[in-house]
Image (cartoon, rainbow, N blue to C red; front, side):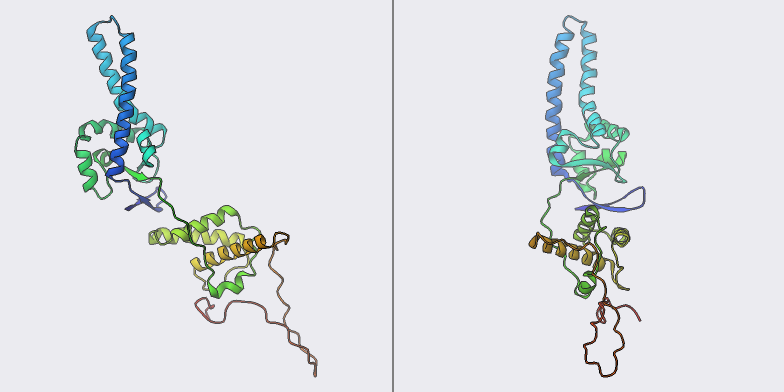
Length: 288
């Protein structure tokens, strides 16, 4: 299940929530780590407080107990950006409701409330709440998300047929690898994004690609088709380069053929080939 998170810049993000089974396993791992730390602290205190006053020893033990079992999640989640040993093992982490990393005050509220809800209320509220929040998350303004999501091999981007001829004229020499990767990830996830996020991210990528790639697409070309055509053409040229390792790929589009000249009367020479341009029909035809 995914949920929408709105960042401070009002950008909607889709995140995958961590539900109670993974959170319960992470809690058990953290509990084992806390008890292991408590055993070490107990052994140290036994040596340090040997022969000390019993009231003083009891007070020190109580303070140490609180520091271990409350300090463990607070320190780890604050310094490790919402992760503990258990959460890291399960691939989950704590974020603020606006998608930013958790801070000390959020970790403190979650840790203080955990002793009052770990025996049942935490499980109950995380099952009932639509964003899988426990009481500590509700009061701290946090949400637990899944970081490691299984990935599958993505299908190659296909060329929109009406743009195939235009794409052969593209100058891709200034099209960087990181931008190509961003476009590839966007096209692979466009069906998972909310309409608002899809439009905002698509417009940003189209503007970035148009600043690095020439010529501009035919008028009326949808953004997804433009990005697909650029990426598919880049992949086609890379495949051609791999098939012919000794060939040097062109860095600029081939020059356009000159316009046909008027032929002298009686000339039998063939007319010049027409210049490639946008398709004369189809969904990408320029408006008249």
